[in-house]
Length: 231
Ligand SMILES: N[C@@H](CCC(=O)N[C@@H](CS)C(=O)NCC(=O)O)C(=O)O
Image 1 (cartoon, rainbow, N blue to C red):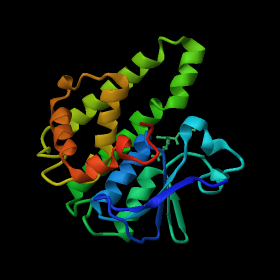
Image 2 (image 1 turned 90 degrees about the horizontal axis):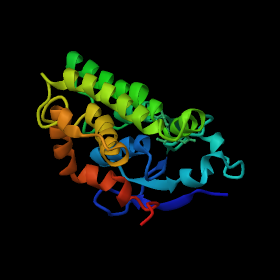
Image 3 (image 1 turned 90 degrees about the vertical axis):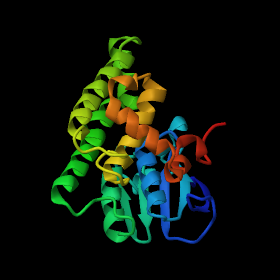
Image 4 (image 1 turned 30 degrees about the vertical axis):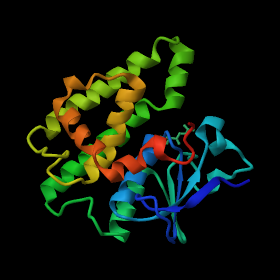
């Protein structure tokens, strides 16, 4: 069995050839980070949809485990190189394809970018992932997952708000879109759309999110623009 494959594409919608293959699910915020970064770097890629709704990642016939033993998206394949986990993928892309650098050379700023990326990918997203919310619902009652997710998001966003306050510009840490933005943008979107977070409590995050929404690279990477999105 093979994953649904879509033509190689650039963020402007044109097609071109490339070695890059991204295993992704339209609604996955972790996949969205990578789609956004690939677009920012101007890298075309073949999109292979892994239908998490149908639990395709667990289907032994699909053998997705061969690509990622954890059976999570995203996975990036670049010729002989297979990288899973969005953070690892982003660092790989940064080194292999240095155009439109996502990390600044200034060490202080660079460490802040890595800190923001880590907060989102280690201290927010894993605590609100679907499987965990389902388990919380089953064990503690159906009314429990939403407040759990909301308090996790608000704790993380409060910390991020403090961290970014003195550094933010048009984007998280200045006036250029960099690594922190790649992690923040999908997480803020999911907080609003999936968990009803009131972003007026987080003015810095709310302001930079407005900037993301105007970026073609962000728009093209958004869930509803993916070919596996349900319309
Ligand atoms: N730390 C990983 C987390 C990946 C992850 O949680 N992926 C989710 C979608 S956002 C997934 O594949 N879930 C499938 C499942 O729970 O079985 C990353 O950043 O890539």
